[in-house]
Image: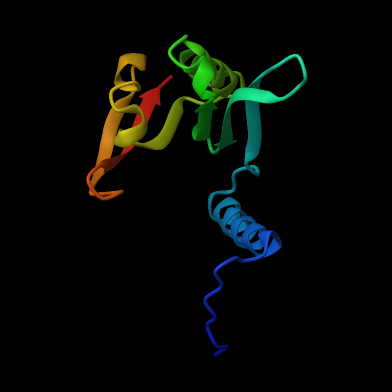
Length: 138
């Protein structure tokens, strides 16, 4: 058996290899097509991303991976619009379910107002807060 080595800053190619191998195993196990990534962005006049959302579609569901809005643009409905856009894209790609996880310290309650249901909670993750898994049937 090879030695195990902890790496503080692993190469991006090595991380990509892990992700590719897990995805390949899941595809082989289910017979589904490969996952498809997508992103939706709000860009400034200079082309710089000011807000965005990313996700993957696979096996009839969509997993949102990252949502971000530049601080100066928050509380204007942009995150709501990004999530609605991601739901529309998920439906267009044949999804019937959207899932994601988020941290209470960043957006507690926001997703409930958008029709998402909490399906799992891990308390003290990070310490003093919680991580939640959400889902919404489309």
